[in-house]
Length: 333
Ligand code: TYM
Picture 1 (cartoon, rainbow, N blue to C red):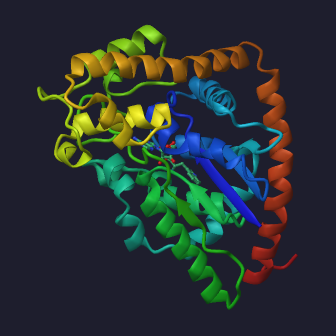
Picture 2: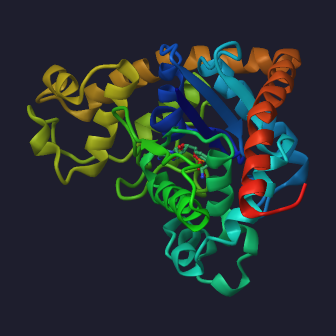
């Protein structure tokens, strides 16, 4: 049986990249009855960078609200908070004894986040991908739906699963498959087509947040960087026009149509025509999610119930897996 696991960090609000690159695909998986789905809020990952401790709990609830508002149904998927399941951290330590420093040093997310001051980066940031591997392997997950930026972390997870199996001579962990699907696995910044849309970019104008009001969405799209040419009549001619391609990709993903269809509809038109249409599609799609999120956050009972039940379900899977790992590794009971 397929088992899906994925997670997001409770740092700031979710943006369109998180939604189109990952969350929308998580929701689509719910159509398949022949699989088990686990979606978590990875709060232990969120503290690997400076964070506001007053904000952590609130962000954790907000991300859960975003999951539910986007269509994750706690009856169909297990929703939980990473730190509620101590087995993640316990397995992480065991995997840390198999993770090579050299491989961790090559992780681009670590290099980006540590920046110039690598010597001062904390061990938690360095070990981040090992905790992520533990998140996945503690459930023996078979599929991991993520955006393109997580591909390298998934490779490390597969590597650790294989190392464990080889070192202990077992066929214990499956090789989890990254699922980098959907029309927008890499949504770019609205201000710079060469960098990805991210929570950590300083300017809020670079991203559309799931909490943005229609006015703000309209303002951000109006100010989004473009070029001065009309939209072409074929996709190939969008090559090299990174900002234009990004907006076409976002339109296609939100409207659930192909990029070719978008191009067909807007061929020869200027951004003065295309942007208002994109604003309409974005608001039409996102406003219901935002208002549902606000409802869920006004009375947190549903969120809390989902997380409570989810933690019990997750632990039922995680605890025996950890016990098996400990036994395989030779610990006494
Ligand atoms: P995080 O919180 O940075 O992002 C959550 C998800 O959103 C995707 N994403 C994007 N997709 C398309 N375009 C973008 N601009 C964009 N920005 C972000 C990410 O690929 C991710 O799928 N390390 C993970 C969290 C994590 C995790 C896990 C994921 C921890 N443990 C176990 C899967 C399984 C992260 O930082 O995601």
